[in-house]
Image (cartoon, rainbow, N blue to C red; front, side, top):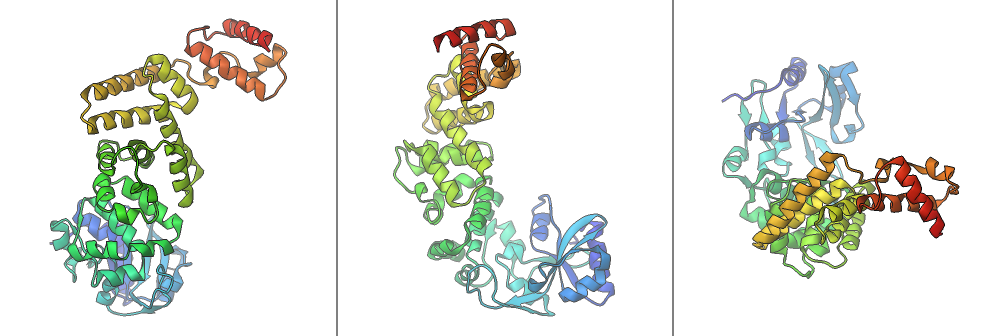
Length: 415
Protein backbone atom coordinates (compact mmCIF):
# COMPACT_ATOMS: atom_id res chain seq x y z
CA UNK A 1 0.00 0.00 0.00
CA UNK A 2 1.19 3.50 -0.80
CA UNK A 3 0.40 6.42 1.48
CA UNK A 4 -0.01 10.09 0.65
CA UNK A 5 3.03 12.34 0.87
CA UNK A 6 2.65 16.08 0.10
CA UNK A 7 4.32 17.34 -3.07
CA UNK A 8 6.75 19.63 -1.23
CA UNK A 9 7.95 16.69 0.88
CA UNK A 10 8.38 14.55 -2.23
CA UNK A 11 10.40 17.40 -3.77
CA UNK A 12 12.70 17.58 -0.74
CA UNK A 13 13.20 13.80 -0.75
CA UNK A 14 13.73 13.80 -4.51
CA UNK A 15 16.33 16.57 -4.27
CA UNK A 16 18.33 14.57 -1.73
CA UNK A 17 17.97 11.42 -3.82
CA UNK A 18 19.21 13.23 -6.92
CA UNK A 19 22.40 14.09 -5.03
CA UNK A 20 22.90 10.44 -4.10
CA UNK A 21 21.43 10.49 -0.59
CA UNK A 22 18.58 8.23 0.50
CA UNK A 23 15.88 10.13 2.37
CA UNK A 24 12.58 9.26 4.05
CA UNK A 25 9.67 11.01 5.79
CA UNK A 26 9.86 9.69 9.34
CA UNK A 27 8.34 9.67 12.80
CA UNK A 28 5.19 11.50 13.81
CA UNK A 29 4.13 12.41 10.27
CA UNK A 30 4.10 8.71 9.37
CA UNK A 31 2.26 7.76 12.56
CA UNK A 32 -0.42 10.40 12.06
CA UNK A 33 -0.87 9.51 8.40
CA UNK A 34 -1.53 5.89 9.40
CA UNK A 35 -3.98 7.11 12.03
CA UNK A 36 -5.71 9.45 9.55
CA UNK A 37 -4.87 12.36 11.82
CA UNK A 38 -3.85 15.83 10.59
CA UNK A 39 -0.10 16.04 9.97
CA UNK A 40 1.34 19.36 11.12
CA UNK A 41 5.04 18.70 10.58
CA UNK A 42 6.76 16.52 7.99
CA UNK A 43 10.25 15.53 9.10
CA UNK A 44 12.80 13.80 6.87
CA UNK A 45 15.68 11.53 7.83
CA UNK A 46 18.51 11.07 5.38
CA UNK A 47 21.89 9.48 4.73
CA UNK A 48 23.20 13.00 3.98
CA UNK A 49 25.37 14.58 6.66
CA UNK A 50 24.41 18.04 7.96
CA UNK A 51 26.93 19.80 5.73
CA UNK A 52 25.58 17.82 2.77
CA UNK A 53 22.04 18.93 3.59
CA UNK A 54 23.16 22.57 3.69
CA UNK A 55 24.93 22.16 0.36
CA UNK A 56 21.95 20.43 -1.30
CA UNK A 57 19.35 22.98 -0.18
CA UNK A 58 21.48 26.11 -0.37
CA UNK A 59 19.34 29.23 0.04
CA UNK A 60 16.39 27.11 1.21
CA UNK A 61 18.21 26.47 4.52
CA UNK A 62 16.50 28.44 7.30
CA UNK A 63 18.44 27.28 10.34
CA UNK A 64 21.34 24.99 11.15
CA UNK A 65 21.60 25.51 14.90
CA UNK A 66 20.81 21.81 15.30
CA UNK A 67 23.71 20.66 13.15
CA UNK A 68 25.49 19.25 16.20
CA UNK A 69 22.68 16.71 16.44
CA UNK A 70 22.35 16.33 12.68
CA UNK A 71 19.30 18.57 12.09
CA UNK A 72 18.91 21.33 9.51
CA UNK A 73 15.72 23.33 8.93
CA UNK A 74 14.77 24.05 5.32
CA UNK A 75 11.86 25.68 3.51
CA UNK A 76 10.52 24.05 0.35
CA UNK A 77 7.62 25.61 -1.58
CA UNK A 78 7.00 27.86 1.41
CA UNK A 79 6.74 24.95 3.86
CA UNK A 80 9.17 24.46 6.73
CA UNK A 81 10.56 21.06 7.62
CA UNK A 82 13.42 19.52 9.57
CA UNK A 83 15.87 17.23 7.84
CA UNK A 84 18.06 15.09 10.08
CA UNK A 85 20.96 12.83 9.25
CA UNK A 86 20.69 9.13 10.11
CA UNK A 87 22.32 8.84 13.50
CA UNK A 88 23.02 6.67 16.50
CA UNK A 89 23.50 8.20 19.91
CA UNK A 90 25.98 7.83 22.73
CA UNK A 91 25.17 7.86 26.45
CA UNK A 92 22.69 10.25 28.07
CA UNK A 93 24.49 11.49 31.20
CA UNK A 94 21.89 14.24 31.70
CA UNK A 95 19.02 11.86 30.83
CA UNK A 96 17.84 14.33 28.19
CA UNK A 97 20.31 14.77 25.33
CA UNK A 98 22.90 12.34 23.97
CA UNK A 99 26.49 13.02 25.03
CA UNK A 100 27.54 12.29 21.47
CA UNK A 101 25.98 11.66 18.08
CA UNK A 102 27.44 9.39 15.42
CA UNK A 103 26.09 9.65 11.90
CA UNK A 104 25.34 6.42 10.06
CA UNK A 105 24.30 5.30 6.59
CA UNK A 106 21.73 2.79 7.87
CA UNK A 107 18.08 3.83 8.23
CA UNK A 108 17.38 0.96 10.65
CA UNK A 109 20.10 2.23 12.98
CA UNK A 110 18.33 5.58 13.02
CA UNK A 111 14.88 4.10 13.62
CA UNK A 112 16.18 1.86 16.42
CA UNK A 113 17.14 4.87 18.56
CA UNK A 114 13.59 6.26 18.59
CA UNK A 115 11.24 6.14 21.55
CA UNK A 116 8.17 4.11 20.53
CA UNK A 117 7.43 1.74 17.68
CA UNK A 118 4.66 4.02 16.38
CA UNK A 119 7.30 6.74 15.96
CA UNK A 120 9.93 4.44 14.43
CA UNK A 121 8.43 4.15 10.96
CA UNK A 122 9.27 5.84 7.67
CA UNK A 123 7.92 6.18 4.14
CA UNK A 124 10.03 5.67 1.07
CA UNK A 125 9.75 8.14 -1.81
CA UNK A 126 6.62 6.55 -3.27
CA UNK A 127 4.81 6.30 0.08
CA UNK A 128 5.51 2.66 0.91
CA UNK A 129 5.75 2.01 4.65
CA UNK A 130 9.07 0.99 6.24
CA UNK A 131 8.28 -0.56 9.61
CA UNK A 132 11.07 -2.67 11.15
CA UNK A 133 9.67 -2.69 14.71
CA UNK A 134 5.98 -3.43 14.18
CA UNK A 135 4.62 0.08 14.61
CA UNK A 136 1.64 -0.49 12.30
CA UNK A 137 0.66 -3.62 14.24
CA UNK A 138 0.82 -1.61 17.48
CA UNK A 139 -1.31 1.14 15.91
CA UNK A 140 -3.89 -1.47 14.93
CA UNK A 141 -3.80 -2.86 18.48
CA UNK A 142 -3.84 0.70 19.93
CA UNK A 143 -0.66 -0.01 21.89
CA UNK A 144 2.28 2.18 22.77
CA UNK A 145 5.44 0.09 22.93
CA UNK A 146 9.03 1.22 23.52
CA UNK A 147 11.54 0.41 20.81
CA UNK A 148 13.78 -2.28 22.31
CA UNK A 149 14.20 -2.27 26.09
CA UNK A 150 11.81 0.20 27.73
CA UNK A 151 14.01 0.79 30.80
CA UNK A 152 16.89 1.71 28.50
CA UNK A 153 14.75 4.09 26.42
CA UNK A 154 13.51 5.92 29.52
CA UNK A 155 16.96 5.93 31.08
CA UNK A 156 18.36 7.62 27.98
CA UNK A 157 15.75 10.37 27.97
CA UNK A 158 13.42 10.59 30.96
CA UNK A 159 11.10 12.97 29.12
CA UNK A 160 10.00 9.91 27.16
CA UNK A 161 8.04 8.91 30.28
CA UNK A 162 5.92 12.03 29.85
CA UNK A 163 5.69 11.44 26.12
CA UNK A 164 4.35 7.94 26.82
CA UNK A 165 1.60 9.37 29.04
CA UNK A 166 0.89 12.14 26.56
CA UNK A 167 0.55 9.78 23.59
CA UNK A 168 -1.62 7.45 25.67
CA UNK A 169 -3.92 10.37 26.48
CA UNK A 170 -4.00 12.00 23.05
CA UNK A 171 -4.18 8.83 20.93
CA UNK A 172 -6.22 6.75 23.37
CA UNK A 173 -3.57 4.02 23.32
CA UNK A 174 -2.72 1.68 26.19
CA UNK A 175 0.90 1.11 27.20
CA UNK A 176 2.25 -2.32 26.35
CA UNK A 177 3.02 -4.38 29.48
CA UNK A 178 6.81 -3.87 29.62
CA UNK A 179 6.51 -0.19 28.71
CA UNK A 180 3.81 0.27 31.36
CA UNK A 181 6.00 -1.33 34.03
CA UNK A 182 9.04 0.71 32.99
CA UNK A 183 7.09 3.97 33.31
CA UNK A 184 6.51 3.20 37.00
CA UNK A 185 9.99 1.81 37.58
CA UNK A 186 11.74 4.82 36.01
CA UNK A 187 9.36 7.57 37.17
CA UNK A 188 11.89 9.00 39.62
CA UNK A 189 14.03 10.04 36.64
CA UNK A 190 11.49 12.77 35.93
CA UNK A 191 13.11 14.76 38.74
CA UNK A 192 16.07 15.28 36.43
CA UNK A 193 13.98 16.70 33.58
CA UNK A 194 13.63 20.45 33.08
CA UNK A 195 10.33 21.61 34.54
CA UNK A 196 9.47 23.54 31.38
CA UNK A 197 9.69 20.35 29.30
CA UNK A 198 7.40 18.49 31.70
CA UNK A 199 4.95 21.39 31.56
CA UNK A 200 4.72 21.25 27.76
CA UNK A 201 4.02 17.51 27.82
CA UNK A 202 1.57 17.82 30.72
CA UNK A 203 -0.43 20.47 28.86
CA UNK A 204 -0.83 18.14 25.90
CA UNK A 205 -1.68 15.21 28.17
CA UNK A 206 -4.41 17.24 29.88
CA UNK A 207 -5.93 18.15 26.52
CA UNK A 208 -6.06 14.53 25.33
CA UNK A 209 -9.12 12.41 24.77
CA UNK A 210 -8.13 9.98 27.53
CA UNK A 211 -6.65 12.45 30.03
CA UNK A 212 -8.95 11.23 32.81
CA UNK A 213 -7.86 7.60 32.34
CA UNK A 214 -4.14 8.42 32.19
CA UNK A 215 -4.33 10.65 35.28
CA UNK A 216 -6.04 7.93 37.27
CA UNK A 217 -3.93 5.02 35.98
CA UNK A 218 -0.58 6.83 36.25
CA UNK A 219 -1.22 9.03 39.29
CA UNK A 220 1.90 7.72 41.05
CA UNK A 221 4.00 8.77 38.04
CA UNK A 222 2.38 12.20 37.76
CA UNK A 223 2.82 12.66 41.53
CA UNK A 224 6.60 12.97 40.96
CA UNK A 225 6.00 16.53 39.72
CA UNK A 226 2.40 17.04 40.94
CA UNK A 227 2.23 15.71 44.50
CA UNK A 228 -1.30 17.08 44.96
CA UNK A 229 -2.63 14.42 42.60
CA UNK A 230 -2.26 11.71 45.24
CA UNK A 231 -2.68 13.96 48.30
CA UNK A 232 -5.75 13.48 50.44
CA UNK A 233 -8.59 15.83 49.59
CA UNK A 234 -12.25 15.85 50.50
CA UNK A 235 -12.99 13.74 47.44
CA UNK A 236 -11.20 10.86 45.75
CA UNK A 237 -8.92 10.96 42.74
CA UNK A 238 -11.39 8.70 40.91
CA UNK A 239 -14.10 11.32 41.43
CA UNK A 240 -11.81 14.08 40.16
CA UNK A 241 -10.95 12.04 37.06
CA UNK A 242 -14.63 11.29 36.44
CA UNK A 243 -15.22 15.05 36.58
CA UNK A 244 -12.40 15.72 34.12
CA UNK A 245 -13.79 13.12 31.69
CA UNK A 246 -16.93 15.25 31.26
CA UNK A 247 -15.13 18.51 30.47
CA UNK A 248 -13.90 20.09 27.24
CA UNK A 249 -10.34 19.26 26.18
CA UNK A 250 -8.95 22.47 27.69
CA UNK A 251 -5.80 22.47 29.82
CA UNK A 252 -6.86 25.35 32.07
CA UNK A 253 -10.36 24.04 32.74
CA UNK A 254 -9.22 20.47 33.42
CA UNK A 255 -6.33 21.52 35.66
CA UNK A 256 -8.63 23.75 37.69
CA UNK A 257 -11.13 20.88 37.84
CA UNK A 258 -8.58 18.51 39.39
CA UNK A 259 -8.04 20.91 42.28
CA UNK A 260 -11.69 21.84 42.68
CA UNK A 261 -12.95 18.25 42.42
CA UNK A 262 -10.38 16.96 44.90
CA UNK A 263 -11.98 19.32 47.41
CA UNK A 264 -8.82 21.06 48.61
CA UNK A 265 -9.77 24.02 50.85
CA UNK A 266 -6.75 25.92 49.50
CA UNK A 267 -7.18 24.77 45.90
CA UNK A 268 -6.19 28.12 44.39
CA UNK A 269 -2.90 28.32 46.30
CA UNK A 270 -2.05 24.69 45.58
CA UNK A 271 -2.74 25.01 41.86
CA UNK A 272 -0.71 28.20 41.63
CA UNK A 273 2.20 26.60 43.48
CA UNK A 274 2.08 23.58 41.16
CA UNK A 275 2.08 25.69 38.00
CA UNK A 276 4.88 27.84 39.38
CA UNK A 277 6.91 24.70 40.04
CA UNK A 278 6.62 23.84 36.33
CA UNK A 279 7.61 27.41 35.42
CA UNK A 280 4.25 27.97 33.78
CA UNK A 281 3.53 31.25 32.05
CA UNK A 282 1.65 33.77 34.17
CA UNK A 283 -1.32 33.84 31.78
CA UNK A 284 -1.99 30.14 32.36
CA UNK A 285 -1.69 30.55 36.12
CA UNK A 286 -4.10 33.47 36.08
CA UNK A 287 -6.67 31.54 34.02
CA UNK A 288 -6.59 28.52 36.33
CA UNK A 289 -6.73 30.74 39.41
CA UNK A 290 -9.72 32.70 38.06
CA UNK A 291 -11.65 29.48 37.38
CA UNK A 292 -10.99 28.12 40.87
CA UNK A 293 -11.96 31.42 42.52
CA UNK A 294 -15.08 31.68 40.38
CA UNK A 295 -16.14 28.18 41.44
CA UNK A 296 -15.92 29.19 45.11
CA UNK A 297 -18.21 32.18 44.43
CA UNK A 298 -20.94 30.25 42.68
CA UNK A 299 -22.88 29.08 45.70
CA UNK A 300 -25.30 31.79 44.56
CA UNK A 301 -26.42 30.78 41.06
CA UNK A 302 -28.99 33.53 40.71
CA UNK A 303 -28.56 35.91 37.80
CA UNK A 304 -27.22 38.54 40.17
CA UNK A 305 -24.80 36.06 41.75
CA UNK A 306 -23.53 35.05 38.34
CA UNK A 307 -23.07 38.68 37.29
CA UNK A 308 -21.12 39.42 40.48
CA UNK A 309 -18.84 36.47 39.87
CA UNK A 310 -18.31 37.61 36.27
CA UNK A 311 -17.53 41.14 37.44
CA UNK A 312 -14.83 39.81 39.76
CA UNK A 313 -13.35 36.89 37.80
CA UNK A 314 -14.43 37.37 34.19
CA UNK A 315 -17.13 35.73 32.09
CA UNK A 316 -14.90 32.96 30.71
CA UNK A 317 -13.81 31.87 34.20
CA UNK A 318 -17.41 31.76 35.40
CA UNK A 319 -18.54 29.72 32.40
CA UNK A 320 -15.69 27.26 33.00
CA UNK A 321 -16.45 27.05 36.73
CA UNK A 322 -20.11 26.31 36.02
CA UNK A 323 -19.08 23.53 33.63
CA UNK A 324 -16.90 22.04 36.36
CA UNK A 325 -19.69 22.32 38.94
CA UNK A 326 -22.10 20.60 36.56
CA UNK A 327 -19.57 17.86 35.80
CA UNK A 328 -18.96 17.29 39.51
CA UNK A 329 -22.69 16.93 40.08
CA UNK A 330 -22.91 14.38 37.27
CA UNK A 331 -19.88 12.50 38.62
CA UNK A 332 -21.56 12.27 42.02
CA UNK A 333 -24.87 11.23 40.37
CA UNK A 334 -26.54 14.37 41.73
CA UNK A 335 -29.23 14.93 39.09
CA UNK A 336 -30.72 17.97 40.82
CA UNK A 337 -27.30 19.59 41.12
CA UNK A 338 -26.53 18.88 37.47
CA UNK A 339 -29.80 20.53 36.42
CA UNK A 340 -29.11 23.50 38.73
CA UNK A 341 -25.71 24.19 37.16
CA UNK A 342 -26.98 23.53 33.65
CA UNK A 343 -29.60 26.21 34.24
CA UNK A 344 -26.93 28.50 35.70
CA UNK A 345 -24.79 28.00 32.59
CA UNK A 346 -27.77 29.03 30.47
CA UNK A 347 -28.19 32.15 32.62
CA UNK A 348 -24.52 32.96 32.17
CA UNK A 349 -24.80 32.66 28.38
CA UNK A 350 -27.90 34.86 28.44
CA UNK A 351 -26.06 37.53 30.44
CA UNK A 352 -23.15 37.50 28.00
CA UNK A 353 -25.41 37.58 24.94
CA UNK A 354 -27.52 40.39 26.38
CA UNK A 355 -24.55 42.72 26.53
CA UNK A 356 -25.43 43.70 30.09
CA UNK A 357 -22.83 45.57 32.09
CA UNK A 358 -20.60 43.13 33.96
CA UNK A 359 -17.29 45.00 33.78
CA UNK A 360 -16.08 48.45 34.80
CA UNK A 361 -15.36 49.07 31.13
CA UNK A 362 -19.08 48.60 30.42
CA UNK A 363 -20.13 51.47 32.71
CA UNK A 364 -21.59 54.59 31.11
CA UNK A 365 -18.96 56.70 32.89
CA UNK A 366 -15.24 56.36 33.47
CA UNK A 367 -12.44 57.85 35.54
CA UNK A 368 -12.53 61.16 33.69
CA UNK A 369 -16.13 61.64 34.75
CA UNK A 370 -15.20 61.01 38.37
CA UNK A 371 -12.38 63.56 38.13
CA UNK A 372 -14.92 66.09 36.86
CA UNK A 373 -16.85 65.50 40.10
CA UNK A 374 -13.77 66.28 42.17
CA UNK A 375 -12.21 62.84 42.62
CA UNK A 376 -8.43 62.86 42.88
CA UNK A 377 -6.71 60.35 40.55
CA UNK A 378 -5.89 57.53 42.95
CA UNK A 379 -6.64 53.85 43.67
CA UNK A 380 -9.80 55.12 45.40
CA UNK A 381 -11.17 56.09 42.00
CA UNK A 382 -10.89 52.48 40.82
CA UNK A 383 -12.64 51.31 43.98
CA UNK A 384 -15.45 53.78 43.31
CA UNK A 385 -15.92 52.48 39.77
CA UNK A 386 -16.11 48.95 41.15
CA UNK A 387 -18.76 50.05 43.66
CA UNK A 388 -20.71 51.64 40.83
CA UNK A 389 -20.49 48.41 38.83
CA UNK A 390 -21.89 46.36 41.69
CA UNK A 391 -24.62 48.95 42.25
CA UNK A 392 -25.67 48.46 38.61
CA UNK A 393 -25.53 44.66 38.93
CA UNK A 394 -27.65 44.72 42.10
CA UNK A 395 -30.18 47.07 40.52
CA UNK A 396 -29.47 49.99 42.81
CA UNK A 397 -28.91 52.33 39.88
CA UNK A 398 -29.24 52.38 36.12
CA UNK A 399 -26.22 52.14 33.88
CA UNK A 400 -26.69 55.63 32.48
CA UNK A 401 -24.38 58.61 32.70
CA UNK A 402 -26.77 60.75 34.75
CA UNK A 403 -27.76 58.01 37.18
CA UNK A 404 -24.15 56.93 37.75
CA UNK A 405 -22.94 60.50 38.33
CA UNK A 406 -25.66 60.98 40.93
CA UNK A 407 -24.75 57.71 42.61
CA UNK A 408 -21.10 58.70 42.57
CA UNK A 409 -21.93 61.98 44.31
CA UNK A 410 -23.63 59.99 47.06
CA UNK A 411 -20.52 57.86 47.43
CA UNK A 412 -18.43 61.02 47.68
CA UNK A 413 -20.65 62.21 50.50
CA UNK A 414 -20.00 58.98 52.39
CA UNK A 415 -16.25 59.53 52.47
